[in-house]
Amino acid sequence: MPISLHHLRAGTTSRWAVHHDGGWGELDGDLAGLLALPLDEARARVEAAARATGEMPGDETLPPVDRQEVWAAGVTYLRSRDGRKEESGHGSLYDDVYDSARPEIFFKSSPWRVVGDGDAVGIRADSGWDVPEAEIGLVLNAAGQIFGYTLGNDMSSRSIEGENPLYLPQAKMYDRSCALGPAIVPAWAVDPAPFPVGLRILRDGQEAYSGTTSTSAMARSFEDLASWLFRALTFPSGAVLLTGTGVVPPAGFTLQPGDTVEITSAPLGTLTNPVITVG
Image 1 (cartoon, rainbow, N blue to C red):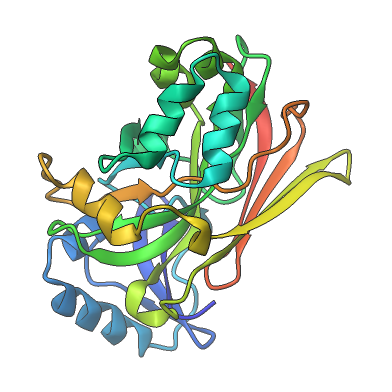
Image 2 (image 1 turned 180 degrees about the horizontal axis):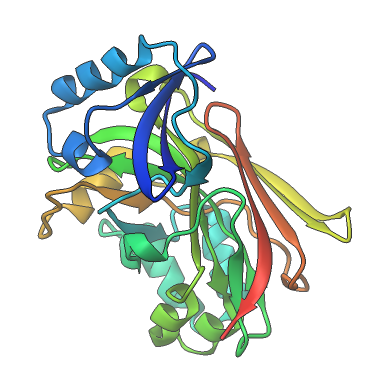
């Protein structure tokens, strides 16, 4: 992983640190303050911290957010559109969203509900068909510019959303339904080429499902999705926008408690979460 920004717990407090070339430097301030700055000023602060060569200034990795809401875009890949049609009797609705100028964007999580790398994600007790959604997350500053990237898991109840699209908030928004991590990689530190995205699900130590995609398969650009989010909303502390999934397990597959979900993209690392039942 190139230069990366980490949220760490140190005793009873938390702090932000930059990791680069094996060394650690503590960031001056928090992520909310960084994302309130113009992009060039934020970059200067991150690069100043990256020049330090100290030890890791914390003992636990936290989700890479502090005051940022998490939003998500849907039906941005053809496979995602087809997956929604598999589960729903309202297939034409997803065709319309995939082809329209306006994307589907919905609220996903408050920052305090987000879980990080190594923490458990949840499947609802009242749902019988549940999947992870492996996504690239855009870390956006207060001006709507892409400050960096992280990995995201947009946990989803296919049975609830499939029953009625108006149940989307219940299918998508619940405790432990959003994982981010393991860190934020600044936009200037990665190749602008498309990101590879891999999803692997382990069950009883064996691979139960795996799939890969690339953001080159997206029907919309990162910048376009970000611009729609900011059209009538302000985010003084920045925001995270999940950009949709192109890896959807087949219709017969559902997550089970005890599974482990691994989401990987070479420039961004690996986000790993065990699965539990919530509710």
